[in-house]
Image 1: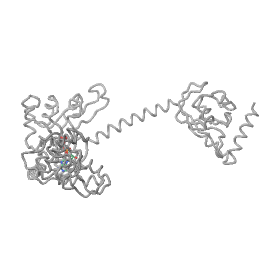
Image 2 (image 1 turned 60 degrees about the horizontal axis):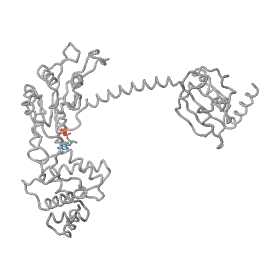
Image 3 (image 1 turned 180 degrees about the vertical axis):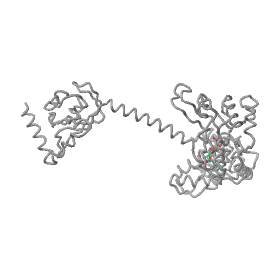
Image 4 (image 1 turned 180 degrees about the horizontal axis):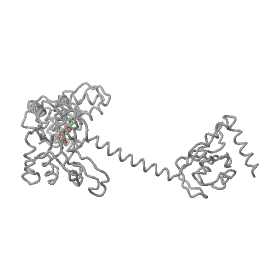
Length: 466
Ligand SMILES: Nc1ncnc2c1ncn2[C@@H]1O[C@H](COP(=O)(O)OP(=O)(O)OP(=O)(O)O)[C@@H](O)[C@H]1O
């Protein structure tokens, strides 16, 4: 039996020696921490390293000289021998060992022929412990990166704010003056008008600009977490509070806290916010010692705070405390002069981002941009430009590239101001096509409804690139 094994081993290593030195290879495998088992092309086990025994608890003689095709025909090694394909990360438990393993199995191929299989094994338990540790580390990284996402330097300054319409210039001028004071600021304006941009710029132009700028979206934090997010907590304050945690106010200490969507803050929390603003100190949840806080508050909302006060949803005392200095950012449709200015800036940014070289806007594209009512304000304009740049083929953006900008109904055309007839005509044709469809039958009905011939409808569709 022993001589038989010796012969098999000798034959196996003979092949290896012709390519490498056995003396060089075995000590390497012997010193590996992972277990290694090698079989020849017939499935005979010709080598196991010392770690194999440590991991499986099986003596080498339990394997050496045994044929795995016979004792473990369904095991990964037998399957690699049968298919010639590697099998990785396979969980496997040997019939005579209680240890669950993770195995990595490769065929040993020389001159295109499989001369055996090498299998590297690890204790699955150890891997699970490692995975758990990794999971723990991932959670820590996530918590830290969430914190860092909130604590940052202001990203934008006044130089990044585009606009030259008189109403808007007044806002910028006012924000610039306010920046140098220590007062609480309330920024009002519809969604997408640039409230956050202003908050960044005010912080950057303030004396606190080298200190943290912490943004909190009051609407995005679940109300049961708001208090601990704002004020932090002491270890043991509630189940799951395994360690002390700093809140947003502490993270913002000496800098600025930007309370976005303040109109969505719970009534209960409003009282606590008022206390910080009045007293300059706060308590962590479960804490008994007051912590001194020196933060400047910039708040913003797209809701009508005064109305919320009247409805009893926003504290009157807090309202008067925060609305000392108000900046009301006008909606984009009231700043028609700024639309093309902003569009040019967003075009350049989109070109850079998407690697395009679009040089500007055609006349009809400009008309569409100027006469659309932009309910999503500047955010909508930025997205519209980026979308059209992504899709455009020419070196100039045309009305066709802005096909998705469609007033939903004719009320949305601003009939109070004077609008070029062509814009109205284009809108009416679009409405008719939307209503009746673009089939020949639909176009006939659209032409009837518009009081023009089918031929002139076709001409206009071509002219307006509809
Ligand atoms: N005047 C401006 N110049 C350049 N970019 C602007 C201007 N105003 C807004 N933007 C850009 O428009 C997008 C929306 O702005 P921002 O997030 O500041 O609006 P918001 O009023 O805070 O919106 P929301 O109420 O939805 O939070 C941002 O990408 C911002 O950089």
